[in-house]
Length: 303
Ligand code: NAD
Image 1 (tube, protein in one colour):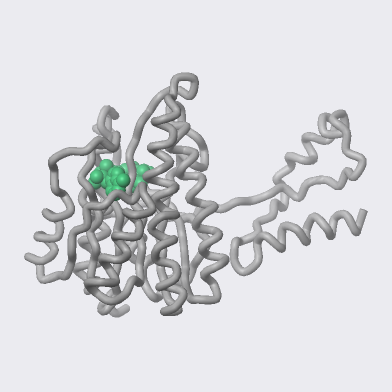
Image 2 (spheres, protein in one colour):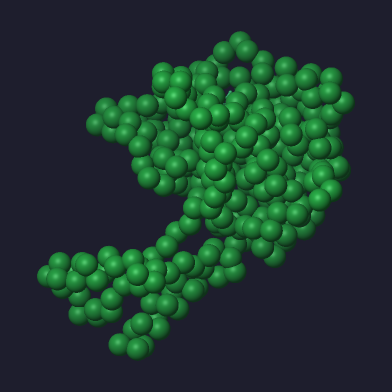
């Protein structure tokens, strides 16, 4: 297969100065994309630092013959999301790819988590996704083209202790991506969620000595493909961790038809309700929402 390239494509990558985002930016730039490297260079908990990872990466990309500009706005505000899309449009005239990868961590047990820490983490991950996609969507719809990758986490699917804010935000991004996929379908705009795993500074405090190789560069090819014109999927969640590439998906049990439902009937039928034999999946596209509805209606009709 010929190399998949991004010539004439313009990408905005949030939180691209370090870790996973940096690996994505280097891969796309090496393959011809013009990249807006967004990163205000904050600490892992989101406090400002005097580091300049965005500018440093731009210099690295340029030294290797690529094209990039730095943007240090925060994706956590509407203005920040708009500014990074404006930077792409004003400098390169278009926006084809968004990889929303920025993230912070503020851990605490649920019973002790401050409302401020809950909001701040949602601001960067979840509202950040909305902020940057909202600003780009009119341009992408007009161009009839877009590739969007939002960063989820297995924590959003399975939960994780001391991670309420993070897990909520990551789960919310799945709803955002699925809706972009539905609304974007008519415009050749595809949106997917990456569920990555890599040893970055987010692993600080963990003993990673027994981990298999888990470099950010190992995740980048999947995100690259999801960002590419040839990407054939939308409304999906793809996993890349320690060399494993897979799809995570929602499924439902067949369920039981109990129109006169009572609490006791739930108790008596819980095994049947729970039975995963012949379970159902309704892919987001072309019509997962409707397929779910029709399946329920069909059961009701059949009685
Ligand atoms: P990282 O801390 O190395 O990189 C995150 C970057 O986001 C930092 O450079 C930071 O400055 C930037 N950032 C923070 N707040 C920002 C804001 N408001 N606007 C713009 N940029 C901001 O972390 P990483 O491990 O590379 O994580 C990248 C993404 O992948 C995050 O969304 C994270 O939640 C997700 N993730 C990582 C893992 C993993 O194993 N590393 C697992 C699941 C999900």
